[in-house]
Image (cartoon, rainbow, N blue to C red; front, side, top):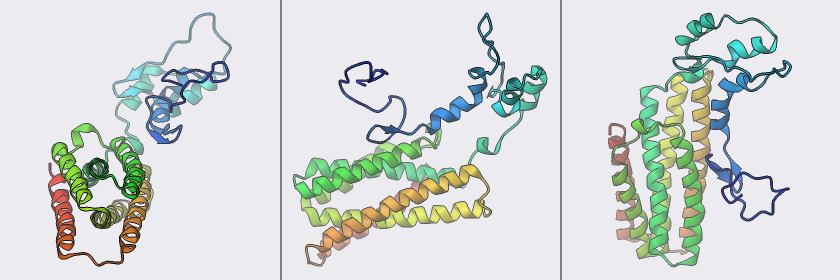
Length: 281
């Protein structure tokens, strides 16, 4: 509430806002996945069935890679078992769980292209909003901008900054121009551009899903399956954007001009080149 964590039943609400520090999903709903991912390993330090001691609880020692896993000591603590902490730390020092394993290099490169693409998509709609005063186009762009911003936040949570494209400023500029230039030409050019962009993105996400299935044919690796589910959801949104843009373009009842067909081709070709570059830089 107004960037303060207060109980609304005890205070008159000023402005209700999502909880700060967590990615916003919708309205006041935030994504708590990252919070609980960090909380689970240290949960045993806060939860105990033992009687309250006269002095404060002592926290558990940590391994060089972080807090000792709850699965190894939390249950033992709750059962009142004695723990040989040096032995536990030694056992966990070199332990890597499936969830901690890094993604294959090919999938990290794919995520880099996704991050750059969603960054560019956000800028496409911002460019449209700057360049047009058409109410229908603005409503279209605002709704799609919210979706692309959510996609960007979800992918940023998976891709560490060192793995992101070093050409992000270029992709943002290119995205802004891809939105602003057709917006100056009119609504038909905007809808044709978005249809072309989303057609490419649909294929791009579909190829990545196939790649994940090759890496995990048994669908048994939780990190890969979580990534697959995210990409599938993003793909569904992009398909909806493509179909909406195509339907709005068709309402005009006119075929695309030669200039518009050339522009649409250049958008698709530019997207393919950008992906190839982004896999490496």
